[in-house]
Length: 360
Length: 161
Image (cartoon, rainbow over all chains, first blue to last red; front, side, top):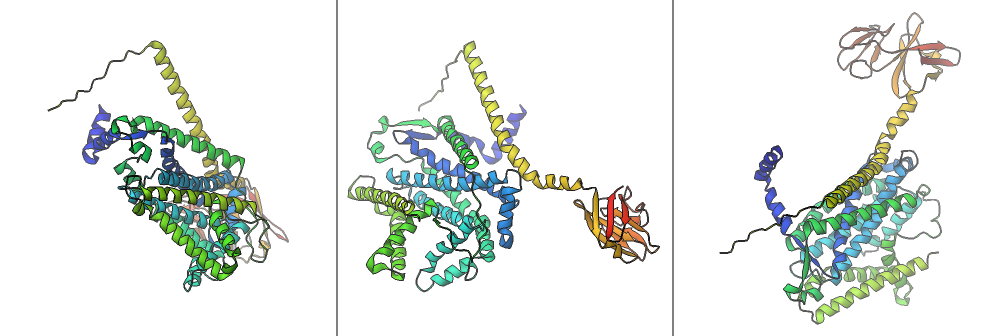
């Protein structure tokens, strides 16, 4: 009786029954590719893990000159600090991975076509912000790996003609990576990026509710009567939550069995350690730049500029694909887009593999 | 005009079915509790780490203040006894006393005032005797905790009374 009164009171003011009705009628298509629908949800779950573990790390982390010491304290002094830090680092990597799976599944299902162009664009922006999250978070422990990764990473904007040096100095807070760099990367990592990411994520999720799941072209070809679907509540939600639980288990396993290491403190006078290499999600562009540098006419600065130019064009084509391949009839453009996707996947995998193969 | 009537067949549950559902819910609940505990325990210990460190600091029973025997008369030396502030006072008559410097009212750090020969808390005007640490006036409900003091040539040893 009281529960009903409270519900009615809230419902009158917030319109809960409309939301409930929407949720009851929401369905998710069922076909051979349904598995890929879970990856957006998995990415969201891992992002929530990031928020949660991030706040916990914030309790003891101190940016600036004490950054390394505070991470050492978190890792070796505070109870279970190693686990929380390890979960944050592992979840970051798993999140980038699941966002990529999500992106490629959307690409090959052609889920970016009308009316879902903005979903694709906001998703690409979210991936972009996520990689800046990764890059800035990597510096925060201020160990030797983070030091050199940041130094090398900032060489990429520095190679932009004319304005590059100014951009790199602005990001670094001076000509060298140091305590000012950690301080501003920290501000970026915990304030600026979340402030950009969260509203964009809200927009992205709202669009998914608005348009529902896209079906791949093979399903679209079938008459509506032959397509199958399942109710979102509770069938899909139950499976979605099961995926979250599996993700949590994998994360817990990775974080505790392979705890994230903390290297020696960053020291500009100590040479870079042998075998140093970028995180796996930056390996491919790193290797492509390296390979371009071996081409005879592209050695030195010219190669860097050409490399950045090629990346920019490639990424721009990738981002703008909904406007090129917009028609739902699978014509020539649809096929070209498909091959473009395949080339991108093969290039990404191949250069990553070569990158790991040639670590010295 | 079409009217949709929702029909719901009354489903008669077999006794066995009820038992399995109940067993399933119990198992799911237990698993949920295990997960919650497995997540909550490390997080609690992580957040409680400083408390535990402070707790081991309160186990301190004696503090040696090096060269404190040189403290001039009518002056105070503030120091930490374990995790909390404490004060060593060298009186005009040459006597030494040490108290906890935490006001017994609401926990502000108190101040020794040699000209008035009293210990004063600026937060709410509490006053303690500089000789005994007794609460003289204002809101403090209890005297300041007094420590034992032993002075020698190299320093001053303060210990729990």
